[in-house]
Image (cartoon, rainbow, N blue to C red; front, side):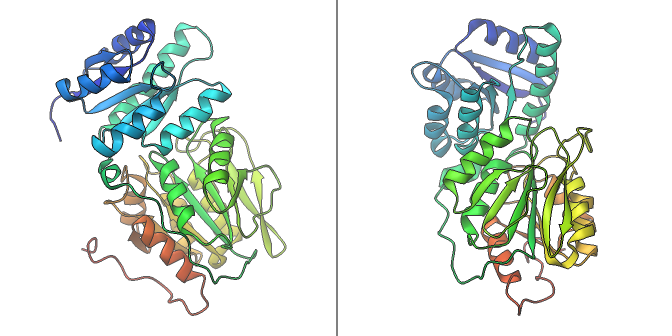
Length: 359
């Protein structure tokens, strides 16, 4: 890793926005703005000339929008990209498409033209640029479609799968769901994301995976073949409903800096589902979810974490692994296979640790 400041290229069609981003990023001594571009074509030339480590990219631009640019860039020249989005419905839809096309994360433009809103956005952007600079996006060089899920499982509603993710998680979740059998038990997902974007994310998954996916509402029952996405801005838990499980939406107070928090969700799963649950921690920065997954394992659940080689940011999975919350580290392919194996009656009590990661 370079010992100097993070080299950032700003791409935005608005001269005013480019100036705001440039000045706001320049205020951080750990970030160096090496160039600004008004469209994808200028950006293409500056990438070669200035060799940035991270790109900030406007979602909607003339001539070639951010999504099209990413689809062309990532297979040829994979770089960590942080999208700059709007809170509009169109902005949310394009942002989700950008995350599927390779963007690491996004920030939203302030809905009000107030100094405080701009400063909050810049604080978030500076933080996410630093996280993005550590992201592993090399897999986009060899990106291919997930294989179709294998069949043979009987639908069951008395078990559940809990998944937690953050940075890089939108793409990882989609890929994992595409590798699971659509008759798998109900899935509850916590992806760190603001209010409004989780419904759009759920819609994207509903149209691109074999599952029925929607944003969770209070009282929703977890059912086989269905994936529920915890809504942004609310804590989400699970409660027992006879032999089944249903969603319980809680308050807006942040835990570990997040609402929803993976820890809140997984701790509730440990309490009410125990050994009838399976838990997975995917790519993301920080420690959210590690303690919740540990509670799940102690309650008898089957637990996994994404391995370093396949994770965009190996923070949350590493923490879960290091405290003993995850029984094994696996790639997305390996996680899907292990979950499907775990649903078979004859499964072993615990998987073998990955030879490449065992100490």
